[in-house]
Amino acid sequence: MNKTILVTGATSGFGKAIAEKFAANQSNIIITGRRKDALLALANALETKYTIKVLPLTFDVRNKKEVFTILSGLTDEWKNIDVLINNAGLALGRDSFENAAIDDWETMLDTNVKGMMYVTRAILPYLIAKQKGHIINIGSIAGKEVYQYGNGYCASKYAVDALSKSMRIDLLHHSIKVTAIHPGAAETEFSLVRFKGDAAKAAAVYEGYTPLYATDIADTVFYCTTLPEHVCINELTIMPTAQANANLFYKK
Ligand code: NDP
Ligand code: 8X3
Image (cartoon, rainbow, N blue to C red):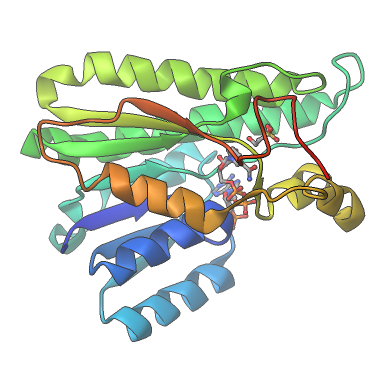
C-alpha cells in the first residue's frame, strides 16, 4: 500500500487498532497520544512486526502551541501524508445536565472539537500542497442522536459531524476527501475513561450483547481508504448488531 497515515489517539482503542491495520498493509504511520510509553511500545512493535516506519509524537491535542509546533515541523520524509485520521477523543461523565461537571464539558469540547480542529489545520498545508488527501473524522452515534445524560459529549460529537460537513464543502476545491465515521458502542478504554476508572461501571456498558471491537472500526476506516480516487464515503454509522440506535439495545 505504501501510504503515509497520521492517526491521533493511537495509545489505545480505535487508534491503536487503526495503526496496526495500516501497518499490516505496509503503510508508514505517524502515531500520536499523551502516553509516551504506550506510544513508543506501539511504535517498536509495529516496526518490528511489519517492517514499516513509525513516527511516535507525544502531545496533547488541546495544546494549540504544541500541536502546531510539532505537526508543522514534520521532516520531508513524513510530510507526504495521505490520510489523517482524527480519532483522539473522550467522554467524561454521564450525568444530568444540571449535575454534570463543567470541567468535564470543557475537557470534552477542548479535546473532541478544538483538538480536532487544531490537528486538521496543522496538517492541511501538506494536503493542500498536493491537492490530494483524505481526512477521516471519528464522530459517534452520539453526534447523530442525543441521549439522556449525553449533554456535553453529544454536543462535542455533533460538532464533529458539523465540522466534517464543513471541511467537505470548504476543501472541495483542493480535492481532499472527508469521511465521518460514527460508531455505536465499542469496547475499548472509552467507558473506563468516561467513568473515571470505575471498572465495574465500565464493564456493565458491554454486558448482555456483543459490542463493536476496535478492529471493526479499523477495518472500516481502512476500507474507506481503499476506494478509487473519484469515490468518497462521506459518512457512515456503524453499530453492533444488538444496537438499533443511541438508546436501544437488545441485551440477553
Ligand atoms: P480509548 O479511550 O481507548 O482511546 C482514546 C484515545 O484518545 C487514546 O489513545 C488517548 O490517548 C487519546 N486521547 C484522549 N485525549 C487526548 C488528548 N487530550 N490528547 C491526545 N490524545 C488524547 O477510546 P476509543 O478508542 O473508544 O475512542 C476513540 C474515539 O472514538 C474517540 O473520539 C471516541 O469519542 C470515539 N468513539 C468511541 C466509541 C466507543 O464506544 N468506544 C463509539 C463512538 C465514538 P492518551 O490517553 O495517551 O492521550
Ligand atoms: C461512544 C458511543 O453511545 O457511548 O461515542 O456515546 S456512546
